[in-house]
Length: 249
Ligand code: PEP
Image 1 (cartoon, rainbow, N blue to C red):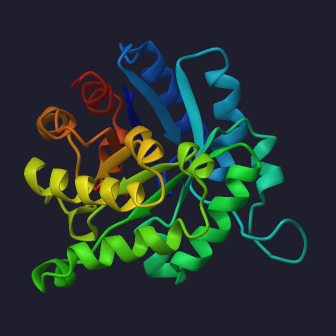
Image 2: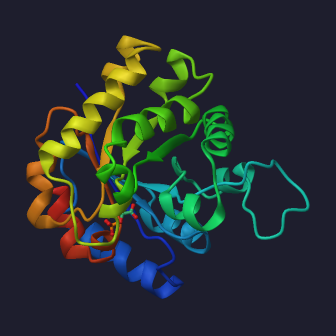
């Protein structure tokens, strides 16, 4: 039985005081739903503080990315070793904003994912098509290729240590959500694609949906058989909305 995961991607939002305020609001809740694992991914600069605030709580910490390099002359990058000292358990990889603004490829995502798993953290590997690709009927092919390349060389054991997020790019931050049926269809095909490597690992793989998840649409998305949670952007910055999404199932 796959437990639902509700993960908040704060993106480039959250000064130190804002981080403190939002996390305290979340802890005051009610954000502790026994059916759900809750994760928040603040910016790097807030991770140390967030870890202190979330100690011994039901909320886990995630980072929004990691460098593919281990150490050295890579100005502004943040290494796995650095993340390990902040207490994160999850790392978002290949978010469409990283792919779009920083030219991140499936191959880079694959390298980072292997690094993250070797470091005993859990990658949240993002995939998803553009509006044009959907309109051109290419969703299946695009998403399958992203899965194939991003998980290239993964053993069943690696799949078991991963999380996938299906985030149609046209639904991110736009207020347009995939209908539960549209999302379910892609989640199912992702699971089938992963099952080509290992059926049991695919069956246990959490596949999150992301793209304008809000309190008013979360329930209908989360009851779909292959939707195992949500990666939430905008609504994760408002404690009331994020708590409502956590409690939507
Ligand atoms: C995201 O950035 O991962 C996301 C899903 O954003 P939003 O919920 O704002 O669409």
